[in-house]
Image 1: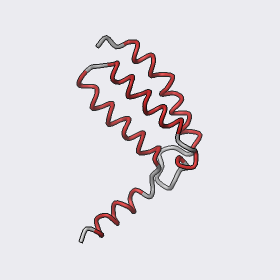
Image 2: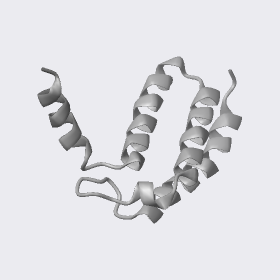
Image 3: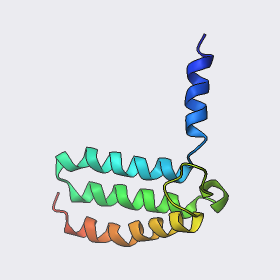
Image 4: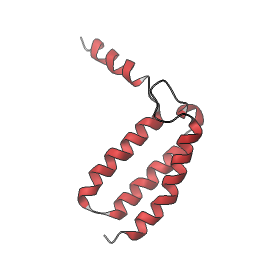
Length: 95
């Protein structure tokens, strides 16, 4: 009885990669952290997503039909940018 909704979800998710999911998680997590106004927490969140994007194998980040970025190198580059930005955000935080 639950098979048709799961098939719809599965067919939707096949167009995206784990990199897209991590970027969406980064944005949603940042939106969730912003009301607390804690830059230290935002810095830790940024570094964790950056590390995950850099450590994942490139084959898991290969773009599909609906991917946000055009290559696995682009996902790795975003991870590197997040890792460079995270210490700055963390050091600016007070609480």
